[in-house]
Length: 287
Image 1 (cartoon, rainbow, N blue to C red):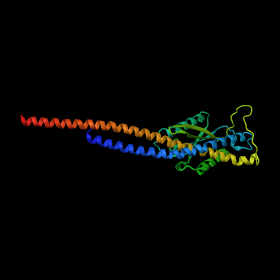
Image 2: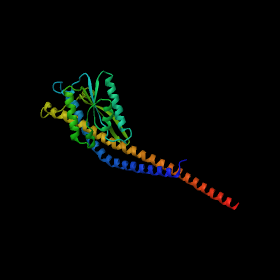
Image 3: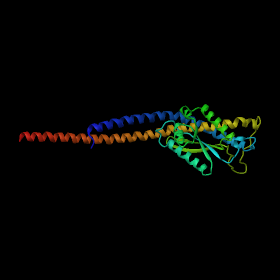
Image 4: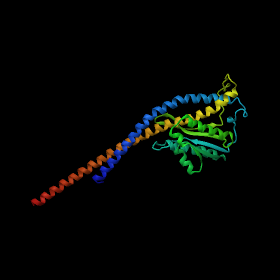
């Protein structure tokens, strides 16, 4: 059994750790509310805008809409979205695994993969695999539409120039504080709407012309899609960290209770030994 001094040091260490994890949990909980509001407000707009774009772009031919051109995928670009910091459970690991699975599926078809990391925890492991050709780690430090706009613009340039033939973004979709769903969404080429009956496409009235509208609509929609992924990831990160720190605090509390029990037992044993020694000494003197 450990001595009293060692147990006291361990109890103090665990208590200090518990204070840190508890504080991190409260910070993440405070940030989560703001991030959750941002993503719930953005999501309906992004989904509807993407649906409109898919319907409208399906009526154009390849010469009118270069962002919907289906090519044989020889090079795929993947943007895994992670956090810049750890201590958030399996949040970053799940993105890494999903990205690896997506890359493996394309490599099995003979395609090459290229990674643009969005967040340090996404860039670091793929840089070791020599797959990262660019990163946007600073974007995750303070997520804004300006950052998403920059990413979206570079993604569109890479696709239209023929540098890549398909673009995916892999991120955690926020459901609630305890649940995040890993998504691998195709950004480019723009996917055609799924057929849902005889009239799969909706009819729209255009003013000005459809071509003029699409000149603004397509780039905006792609940038909004990237922005939504960033907001989802931020909310998921805070939720995952809050849950992880809650579990860590509970585990630290349990460990501290066990250590205190050991400490009390060791202290009681030490007191008993001292009493026995005193009694034995008194008997020796009296004898």
